[in-house]
Image (cartoon, rainbow, N blue to C red; front, side, top):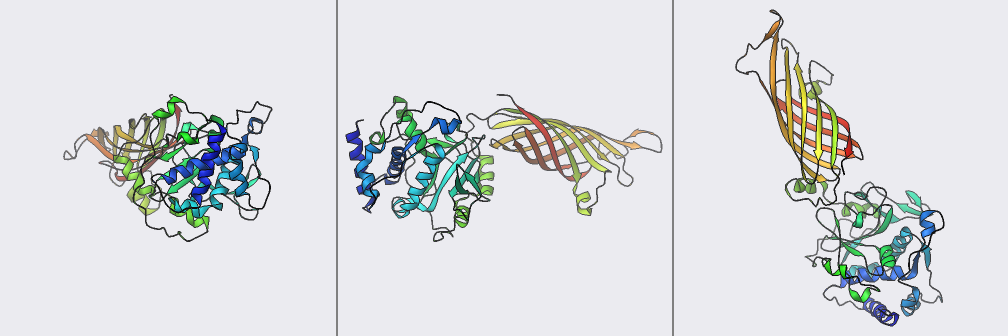
Length: 420
């Protein structure tokens, strides 16, 4: 695509900002325009990104492509600020641009002030939402810029392209669907890189409009179109607030609702890691916890191996139970098993149980006996809970019932290895 045609497109985008009429896909056009506008005033520095001297990638979008529009936006100034930096700089400039033209983005479908800088470190499945802070109100400095994070900043969502150490933009559409825009990759690849976040927390890349692209590989035709605009959501509690601390609370998903929904719905498990772990866990009866006294007369210990792959997985283990309370002298050895359902890459829910041999020891005759035939020799257990992993560290919490110690609560800890 030649620069003359691109200049025409960008001029049309500027004129569209001055009108309030909404056409079929104004919102996603505005996002693509944002990606290109940011890419045009930025140039990516491989040296800044790598800390040494590196050859820069080709700069597909340049200020000359939209010189007339930039001159109009600069107002009385006879210059336009450009930058030579890395992905965070692209994200910062896009954030500030949305902030400057918030009313316009609201008019084309953005919900309230729900726009954020999105970033990842070494874990592409944990995205942090941030805003640009001030010298007196910030959480940390990044690239010399004050940024503000919040107690609800983290999202269990998977970044596009499995990106790590990267920054871009998240914007909430009025119907409750999150969209993302990556102006850095747009500049480096020559076509708009953007999309939406599906119900499983996966960033899905969408097919861009050719009019916004300098290059257009055939593979882009295989990308999906963005979801159509649905009914607008009701205003949130922070609709009229300028306090970002309040705003992000209304941006946070309903984690409890999503959690139980994901137990019974499909999860997008593509590219999820496969784990095998060894857990050491203990179970304490409710009665011990209620009395607030640690009593080892009734307790259970287990060695368990959770195997996590795709969505459905399994856990097996060997458990010892004892009940020495009062006149009891009961011991049991159980084989445990569980069905495991992956909710996120680092969170799984399980439902299972166990069976094994239960023996009552008769101290008076000094031999193993089973005097109460109503209970039999069979030890039984049922339990449910969650497995959480942070890198190679695994933890487990559960509630259970068994016919040796009764209702119990358990916890475990262990190490895991990524199979692939």
